[in-house]
Image (cartoon, rainbow, N blue to C red):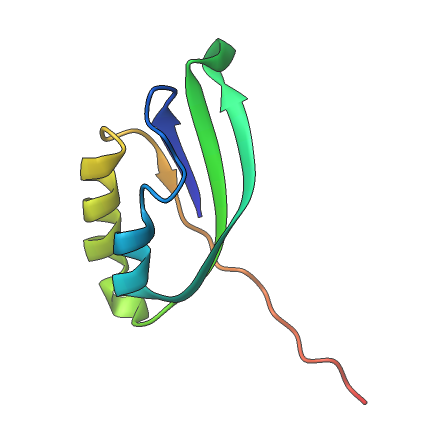
Length: 82
């Protein structure tokens, strides 16, 4: 998941309560400045508890990030053969 937030929003733990509700695990993996430093783009790896509640989670995130861009994509996983 990629979330864009304004630079004045402290991203440390700002979405933790939402992620606790909708994911079984989540990890902030990247922070990048955009728009000449006025925005942060956060990248999270996460596993959803219930994939059918994705829109509900996104709606709550949009309220918190000021309705800035949110991007969700499926991550391909593979099982290594022994």
